[in-house]
Length: 347
Image 1 (tube, rainbow, N blue to C red):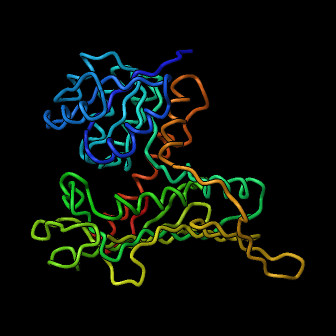
Image 2 (image 1 turned 180 degrees about the vertical axis):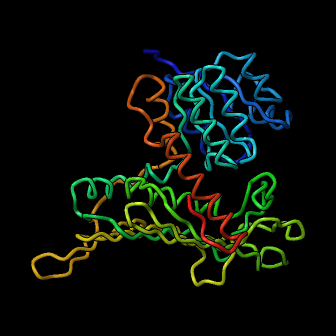
């Protein structure tokens, strides 16, 4: 078993510099960040200088051919997740790819197949799975405290939270808006807690009501003249085991809260809301709401990166798998297809 992981970063934007690089550095002597690559080579150079990374490159291929690496973080716009991941896997690297897995189901399937053929880990940046709330509730579920979970709701809503930076409003580069960006987080969290049941049918609706006009931005000013994604997506998923999930996601919606990220679960023994954690049960002829008196808090990005490093160095395998990524991509693309056609889509 190796004692140090040599890491490369693909994409020198906010998620790389705000989440991946700092948390690799927290792993201390177990990790060496060797290189960073970005199509804007000046940005790669600035990132390397800011974080004391010895090498920078203008492409992922150049980095993979020039630097000795064991693992790679993919922090690019969604359009480039697949090509960057495939290149890294074929070069013999483990991969931590930011969410969503890809732009299409075919891309996600090829990524999963390539990881299996290469014998390398491929995991995705669903950091909410690593939060204390989700891990605690997962233990409740494993112990049967909720019973058969037959209904769920996943919510990722912002009142006026259209990102004023990056390419989040560019459909060509991202594949969509809030559904594929923030909605995917709560969708994955709900599916993970439900045991990732196999989807059967999805029905979706998307809206572009607020993003294409000038307005108040709580996350900076956005380019409303070139806003090409949905600003709201809603949907319902029915699973082969009979369970169902309702999803709401928006960058901009006329709601009371500035934002809400929430998963709600309903089982035949108990139910729960995750953020903050509260469990609902009926015991001793009494309806009970149970909330933690104390629960240690932690940075879920830090835990995600540390666990990826552990896995690459011979520890437990990542909890987010390529196969789950394929299933999630089927749901996302199915919801978009349904929204476009106006009809349910059978997966």
